[in-house]
Length: 146
Image (cartoon, rainbow, N blue to C red; front, side):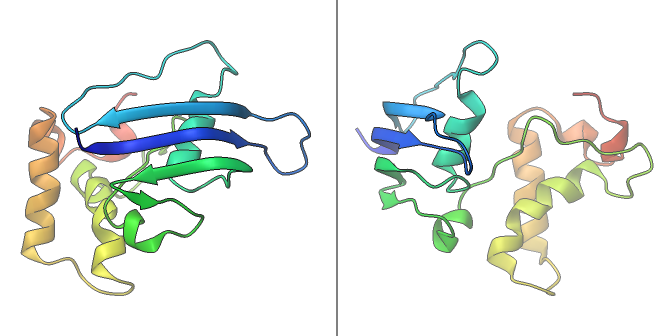
């Protein structure tokens, strides 16, 4: 199978900490496979996602996404992935619509200070439609519940 995500014996430690947040974690997620990351608070679920997205450097092991080794600042890879943290909060007056926030996932490919093209807007709407959220596209992001 085509591995989309593969972690091999990965360990990671947050800056200033001594105890590993992840220790010797291995995981493989193949194309078309649905994977759930579950566990109690403090089990390392968010840390695992930060490692997969290159937001937290690893101290041991290897992380690959779409066949490419993940390192902090893997810019080419970041253009193909998105990560929305669990604690993201938008005040009700936030001026972005839901579709605008989804479109922000395209910015790595669009480039700085450039306007998105029709194709980018369509890809954002396609993403919303694929998860059944197209009806929310024009709702202010701060008015959506978690």
